[in-house]
Length: 77
Image 1 (spheres, rainbow, N blue to C red):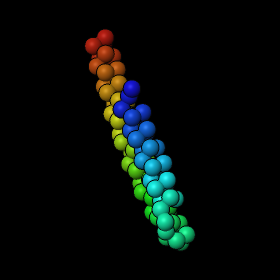
Image 2: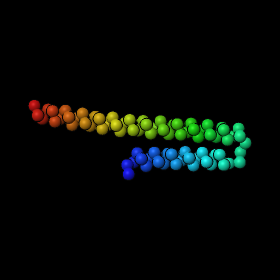
Image 3: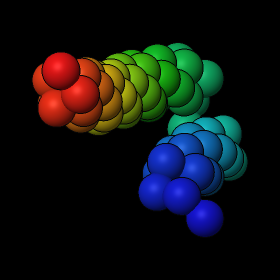
């Protein structure tokens, strides 16, 4: 199983667990809605960080492929 699948599974599980914990807590409706908004914001931040990490890794792979292509091209000349 790849690291990205594990990370996505962890994030989804954390989001579901957090949502259930908030919805089942004996708070007032206004407090519950406030907590849901905060958790949604936290999840959005986590997803943003994950996409940034994925972009960085992808760009690293692309740069590596470009370097290897350039080296192979120059060795053939």
